[in-house]
Length: 111
Image (spheres, rainbow, N blue to C red):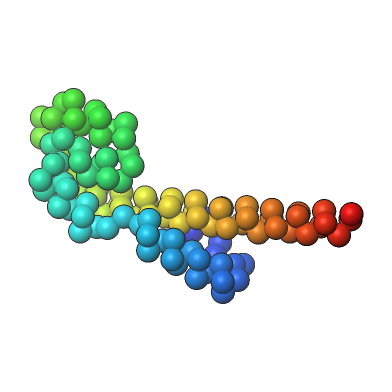
């Protein structure tokens, strides 16, 4: 469950969330393939948006392979964490839009 609870979203908001998650979520399969073929260069970390550590892996060739090996045990958690962050960002955007609409309606009724 995401930090910004989904329970108070309307069914339309949940459909929007689902649609956006389908577009933006990161795939475990893609991450594993990137780790397999570009693990020493941090390709899987670039894919997951972890640019800082990806550049560090690129410059050190995956910590001479040690870092790449450690990521073998961390990948599933990194994918889950990235997808939770994406979901929370989408929920925040939905709430921001709902609040903007509400404020717009309130302002138009005062005029």
